[in-house]
Image (cartoon, rainbow over all chains, first blue to last red):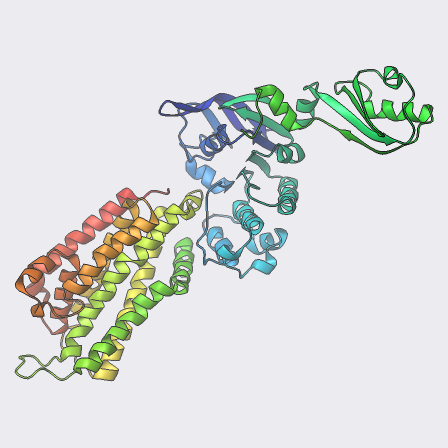
Length: 307
Length: 248
């Protein structure tokens, strides 16, 4: 796999404030790479340095093999960008925006196809101001895809969208990757990073505190997982002793919560279920509660995502 | 080139979709003409040395008014809004050149100014049988010079004002005294001497002087001062607006 973005010791300061503090990472071709962290962690500064919109204070950057500031024309022609704060004129229609932006690129893709692919066909003649938040973001994705890019940057793509629109956008981002485009995104929704990204860099106060696949990040956390179920008859005495790695058993009337270590060979849930059936206990409403990236962030930084 | 054409076309449509700018450029000057026409008619005042009636001398003055309004309002508001709302920021992430963006603006507002003036002249000729005594080419050249040098003011305001709202207010503060005092609204000769002196500080005065002179057949040679000032404005306008251009 080729490295498509290479960051080595990136540093960005504004006066005495250090926004990004010597971070290094690579993005491989074809992956969905996410940078997560709370607002003000330095995600947007980093992405804007990669887009060539800001000049780094230190470090080396290579995007598609070139320095994004020195050779910004290469980046502008071959990389798709969706910015956190950008707009189109209120009265510009959807098709006009696509038609106009397509004229900026040497070999644009057919914008009429993008219109259909992104589900904007019906909104073709709608003014930008009259689009919903989700539709605006879909239009911005379409604009970012016009140059037929190898790489697209998506900055806080789903901020301000309702959950339904957010899920629709996630599907679109996966489609984009299926076309062979590498995706670099930033988000402050841990859930988004967990569902969407192949690899996640967790950023806090301008530093990368972890970088791995979401599954590995969670596994390495050694956090508790929980198996929750309801029983009609009381559990046999010493039930939990038979399960390895059980930390604690909580019984609230008919509700039972088994707390166990997450970092194990056999999943906790399968042990619990097989024990229950071997002892002939009938149970219902069983579910497991896994630790998520939110917990990863908390354990890595010692503070919650939302300050 | 293709992007310039597309951008000009889209910007022209956007201009016409904005009711205020379309009204003030195309309709308002006509309304003024009809109001003044209904008051004065177009018979030359008795004892007047030239054959121009009241409306005849109003056409070039109102043309200057169109130039002043277009140069200060739509350009300033459009560009300042584009910058404030991140519209320029988005454009800046594409290969499009700032020169294309600015040229498209200039072309669109120039075409709108031309349309506004054509409507005025047509109304003057058809309704009030206004006589034109100048040289067509020299008045066209004067019109182009006046327009372009005025558009520069709009560009400078758009790039120096912190917000679109401030840009709009400053543009209005500059525009109103000019409309009243420069001779674009009514003749400077009717104003007291001190006001006339004051009006010589207003750029629009020079557009009015030049166009009124050329309209009644005076030559460019008789207006070197007006032309000099407008050319300086044009050069400063182009230089400063290219220099000050920023995406955000």
